[in-house]
Length: 166
Image (cartoon, rainbow, N blue to C red; front, side, top):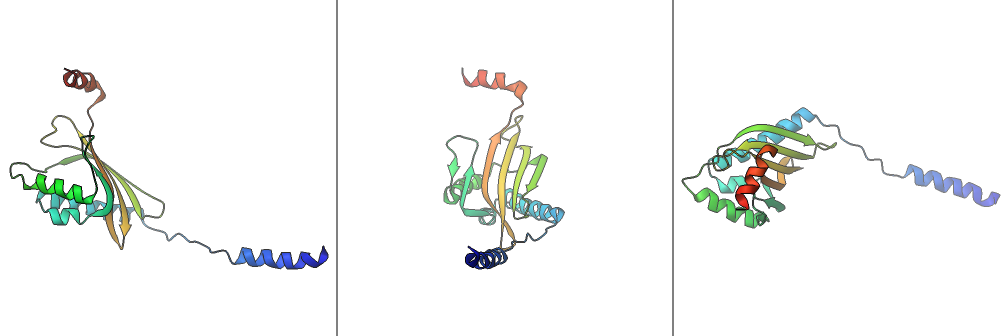
């Protein structure tokens, strides 16, 4: 027993000392939120100017993009096709006045959940909620998930369900 005690002790010390120590690089949440906000502003600018190429440059190829209809679930190719069709309509506009925005960063500062609420011309008076997940890749924030949903007030739900069921 005494013969294996010392080698076991040395082995335990070696194993413990060879463990990789991961360090989290500190980040400034205010700076990260400003970067995310700048990315969102760039997405909005591209949308308003109907610049599909620039708009899609902020979306990852392997993301999931959801519209307001239950059938509207797209990969980037489908999302791009839909956005091309929508942006080619010269009568529509993509003006939105955001009434609420929340940005929640993960503890590393490399991932963000974004919630924005607004009313669009085609949804009045019902508010829309855009939910997005962005990740930081090569110092650029990229969207890998987005979902757009109508969010009526609870008091209006009976009127809406009554209108739809008739």
